[in-house]
Image (cartoon, rainbow, N blue to C red):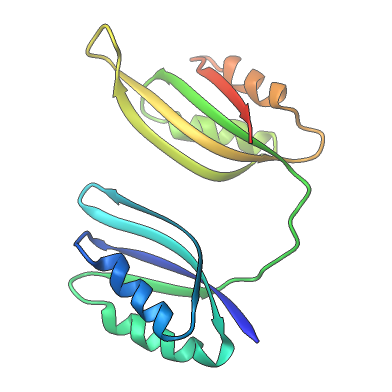
Length: 170
């Protein structure tokens, strides 16, 4: 029987970090299903979904615990694989004047529509003709039944500080 795990990794970035985690997974007959990993502000942050034989779970946890040194933290959680919900996938790009609270405003608009944020990537970008900072975000969303891409676009365009919205169907 197979067990599905989600590994959360956080700590100072260094060469070979992902290699050492992948070696531990492989050594315990694990299969790396998917991952999202990033270097951010000198830190490494990563999520990985792995599957492995149930009888190997405790040994993998011990191997990963042995890797936790120099402020590296690895959290292991068993994942419940559920049947996918019926949602419409949507990729959304936002661009606007950067300001405090902008992520809160974006997530508030999406929560009001009961939209699931599956992935969020954001950064500050310099405006082409000035030194102003612009806010840029790329989101992968799951729209619930009854919510259209136009509903999402309208929610952002009708904000007090409207954001430019580019919609792409995934």
